Image 1: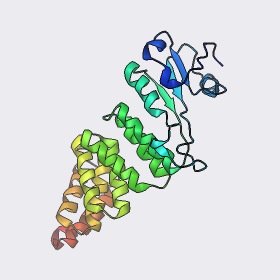
Image 2 (image 1 turned 90 degrees about the horizontal axis):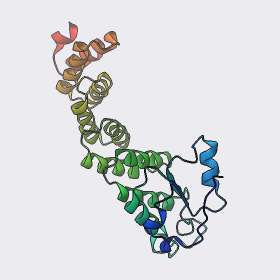
Image 3 (image 1 turned 90 degrees about the vertical axis):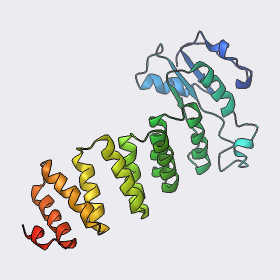
Image 4 (image 1 turned 60 degrees about the horizontal axis):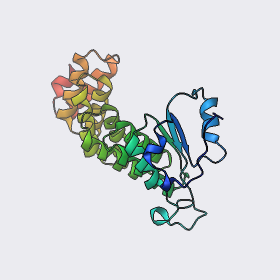
Length: 239
């Protein structure tokens, strides 16, 4: 592991000024696995970074389930140091249980408008099968950043999967606000409108795709004809 000083004090006794002369700080370091992992990944010893593996007992299924009320919940102390000194990069981890994911939500406190933070949280929740939490996270992000393209696409997919096609449409339209010529979004929106039998809107999307020279022109014309036929425009569908 990287050479350095070992501070055996409890983190609640550490003052931000104590850390000013250090480029790397590893909290709750144990046997120094974070330093070893960073070196193994090619992270040089002089590259600034903080790491912290807060005690897992408050969130572990093997513990008492005290959560944030457990006296061993030391994230507030770690958070205080991060907030005061604002290190460029911070790595952390916690148990993979549902309660551990709740701990992850606390990371938003550091930067409530960070697109990366919300995306990471949504991705983790989705992988764990908690789609409701993933949707909630992305919806919160859209409040802070209505012009976020990638989150809007992800949110639309999750909402449609849940059956909320109205919400999915709104998210796709938000994505088009950012990238009005995006063929993929126009196609997704057209398919959604066609399934919902909202034919005028579907026609609009497929006509847009034709104007933008979508690669699958044959498929686009077919779906445009389908939308025209569904909307009662038989002559347009035949053309």
